[in-house]
Length: 185
Image 1: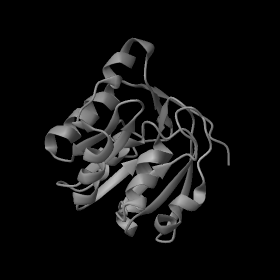
Image 2: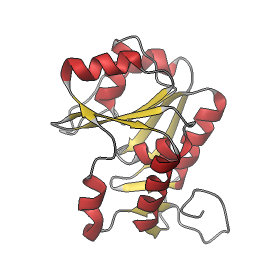
Image 3: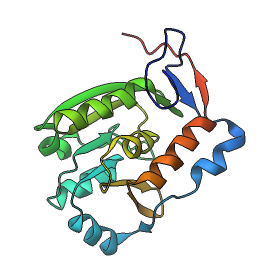
Image 4: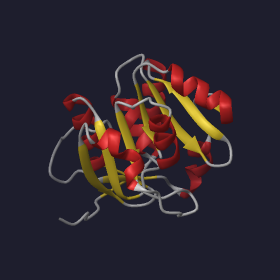
């Protein structure tokens, strides 16, 4: 699979990893960040949106706003468990699972995001870590949609999907190191 997520042969990478030399670049925000009541107000006002992260997805659902796609791994930044029942309303629409090891963006996660979007949305449960799932959401959500993801200790980032943000995500993925990874059965 090429960096853009399209198949191109059998020896293609199954995952992309952030090189240590690029970690600071990937930590940079590419959308405005809001916290507390302001973040909640903005979530309530969203039209079509997707979420990445347990806390931000649970918050949207608690506020009565179901994301088209919500990506979760059932733990917080501090590895505190998250109750799956908080995602029941979104899982009722559709539920998919994918393996995505920590620090990676797998082809399986990217494909699962595209599939969920085309099927009408739902909950994507990640075995591993969902942190880089926001990249897959920005590259796959329709133009005009918003992708929200949590930034520990700072709040919620709101990224409007358009040509510029998609280009930015593609540039980031191109900076990652492709790997062949055995994700098991």
